[in-house]
Picture 1: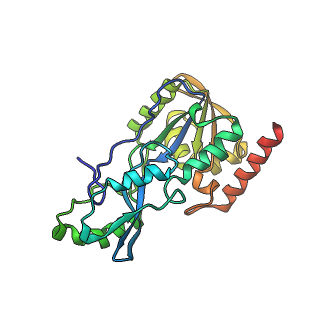
Picture 2: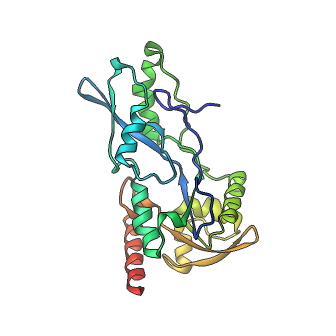
Picture 3: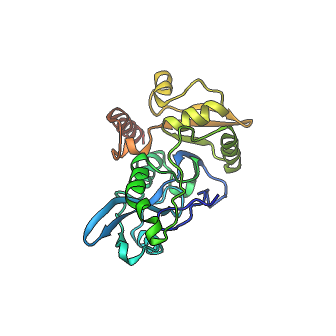
Length: 258
């Protein structure tokens, strides 16, 4: 199956590019897409249309790269143009990861092996609706491709994927595993380390926010540090103020210890 975005770009799994040993392993939820504003005759057709894969995991939304990626997307002239949106839409998780998770712990991006529970892009329900209502009616008239990127699932990390991630953790040689939010905890850690925790709330009730514990994955002992998902920390999208505050307090505590 070939998975295609609106206007034809093909989606592929995103994986860690630098496979050298790392100090820390970061597990997120799922790969994101580059989004563009679709404009026709000066009017916005769609505010944030997914049109291509990000160039790498936890991409920072670099504006030059964003323009280059969007320029590759071939949209019929009669249907308007695609415009860049900037890193407030593309790549916001990257800044949070670098500044609010890795930096307080004394790490930089090069110290980290990056991974997602699901290493392929998926559509939010609102994006699927935009494609259905605004793109699909034009397919036949303009000979456009069908959009085959799948919708956001319930299960991001099945047993087979959990085994793949566990092998990556071993390969990384990392001594610390950072889990970003409920899904990484409940759908990965719960399965491979046989912990009782299904959510960040479960974990924090026993240990507190930002506290490390030790688990065993594939006979490898590793420290684990669950934190809130970047959207909670960076307060973008649908976020929970409770977890934003908890993370800010954790950052203050870490800085005070330096």
